[in-house]
Image (cartoon, rainbow, N blue to C red; front, side, top):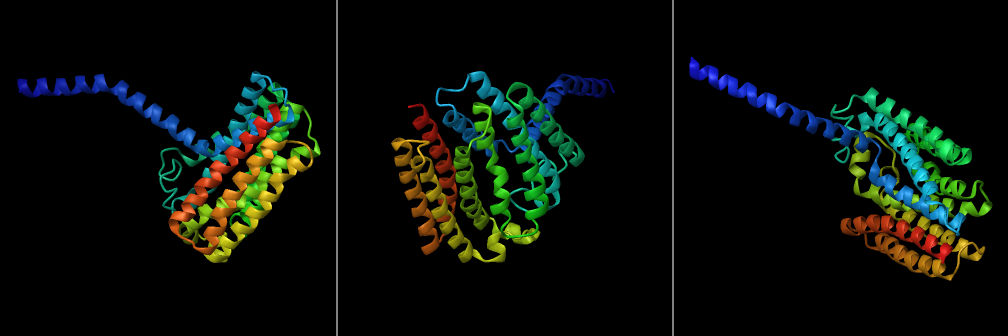
Length: 312
């Protein structure tokens, strides 16, 4: 009996000693899940386009404080949109291999908490950008958030295979936010980075949709490969790539950017066209993946070239 009591005391002691550690691990995991709701990997590319455009709008160089405030507001706005998207798509996500482990799907975060979190981030983003940047930047960030939630996620995504084309306008808002933050206003030249991202979005996303076509088909989402087939999707990738490359030359033709940017745009665009053309002619799973990955690098490098050219 004494030995049993000693063993029980030892177990209780160990529980008391390890409880704080377990509690801390649980808190860290919960924070990580909430961060996951904001889709940080997607936002990192959006923020790069935002900051690069700030240098195009103000070649003398925006103040570091302005850049940091704009990045914070941009993250909060895009993160809020991402969290709300997680809430809306949670039932679809449960049927997709790529998304079935998301926090709202498996109950690590209650769905209502995720929705409140997303709305709260959006509200905070608006007032933070208004107070620390300007009202125009705050308003444009909200246009992006509401466009992603209502125009794309709720309306277009379950309705039409052209969802990502029209809905892509929401993802093209960060450059406009950056321009408004740096310049305090918008000029027609601000449309160049907006249009580049707008026309980049379909070939980028359709390459991804080719890789997860079965998931979309299983959930009933009318993505282009599901409705029109893979061959038609590859052709559309090629067509939109050509349109995108044409728009990337625009900033040089209008005098907004110079020779370094033009050379970068031509080289990067030629490689993108090469991927898209090869994918159209001789498709394969590995080439689809490489096209998708290159599309991410392409946009990042192109906007870096914009910023370098603007300040050089």
